[in-house]
Structures are given as C-alpha cells and as structure tokens.
Amino acid sequence: MPLFDDLPLQLADADLTYLPHWQPAVIADQWLQTLLAETPWEQPLVRLHGRDYPVPRRTAWYGDPQASYGYSGLQHQPLPWTALLAGIRQRVAAQVGAPLNAVLLNLYRDGQDSMGWHSDDEAELGPEPLIASLSLGGVRRFDLRRKGRGRIEHSLNLEHGSLLVMRGRTQHHWQHQVAKTRRPCEPRINLTFRWIACTTTTS
Ligand SMILES: O=C(O)CCC(=O)C(=O)O
Ligand SMILES: [Mn+2]
Image (cartoon, rainbow, N blue to C red; front, side):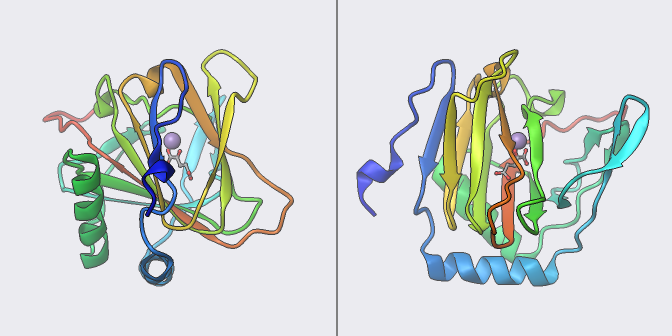
C-alpha cells in the first residue's frame, strides 16, 4: 500500500484521514457478505417537527453493554458483539490507537438510501469525538460542509475496504452527508466505530 494514499485531508478546523485501501478487497468482500447475511437490520423512526419518519436506510447498533445511546428521545441498547464485529473492532482500534466500544452499521440498499446532513456530536461522544468509518460494497460520495453553510466544500468517494477517521474538533465545525443518487449502485454497508462515554443514569 503506497504511503501517499493515506494523506490527511487539508480542511481547516477538521482532522480527517482517509485510507482508501485499508483492507484488501478479498477481506472486505468476506466482511460484506457475512454482514449482509447475519445482521438483524432495523429501520428506526426519527422524530421531526412532531412527526415520525422512517430513516432512509437500514441500521444496527452493536457495542459493550454500557454503551447505550439516546436517539430520538429513546435510549437504545446495543446488540452484543458478534465474532466478526469484535475482530473488525480490534483492527480499527489498533489502526486509530484508541479504544472503541460501539459501532453503528448502516445499510444503503441502493442509491435511494441515504443519510442527511449531520454532525456526530451527541453529548455521549465527548467534546472531540473519534469516528472511524469503514466502508464496504458500492462506492458512495461523502460530502462535507461547514456548519451553518450550504455549500459542499469537499467530497470523497468512499471505497470498498476504506477507512475514514474523523477526530478532534471536526464534528464541532463540520457536517457530513451521503446524498441520494440516481446512478446505479451496489449495496453498501458502512460501520462507524465510536467511543461512547458511559453514564450511570439514563435520560
Ligand atoms: O455512510 C457513511 O459513510 C456515513 C455514516 C455516518 O455519517 C454515520 O453513521 O454517522
Ligand atoms: Mn455521521
């Protein structure tokens, strides 16, 4: 793997590193097939302006038992780590040099599945969230814009087997999205590994 593949992205007030060939295709293929077959996908509802809408993708949440998170007014309990996800977590944690106790899986079945503009800045992720995002399957475009602005300032095509690492104040200053596309595209699974600060009380 050439070193120049892994350059950090030059975006002000952000700390992003993209590793396009983090895993070889044969390993990434195996992970994709196993996750497609064994994941109990859900389609949660999100509350917007007093109404519930299904999210435009499928999701699953895994983690250590205490890594629950609040979302849309509910406290979500993680599923226990599978052998595969525990193994992937170990490799990702070794790569980023930090512990990770939860992972959100997103399944984009085709170009109509998407994720809208947001920052991963929930209180339980702490002031400088570490988000390590593994992509498997069809390539999708990942856009970045500054908070409070409409213009996309940077886009990346997230490749099969790639890892995108976001750290520091990135979530404080930037938002990201995976927009719908009319281009034909293969199913894609994205895994965002995180560290959830454990709380003793639930809200
Ligand atoms: O699918 C992606 O690449 C992005 C996922 C994401 O932003 C998230 O899970 O918070
Ligand atoms: Mn995100």
